[in-house]
Length: 78
Image 1 (tube, rainbow, N blue to C red):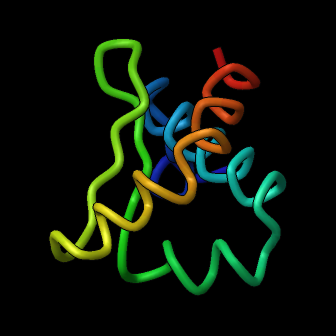
Image 2 (tube, rainbow, N blue to C red):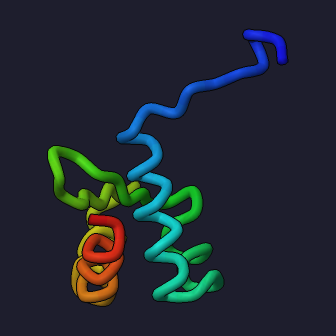
């Protein structure tokens, strides 16, 4: 294998991916696609799940409607 074709994934990136995958499993692919793909992100920062959204409306909606599912995803990952 050539060195330029090998990539190391930092642990925080792996956790971010695991959070997104866990949330997608919980809320379903269609809901995840609609509310998160290209519009919002869930990531891990200092041991906490952090949701970022492209606007305040979307962030408020996610907090109101998907917070329990995000907490469940965090429990799975952590």
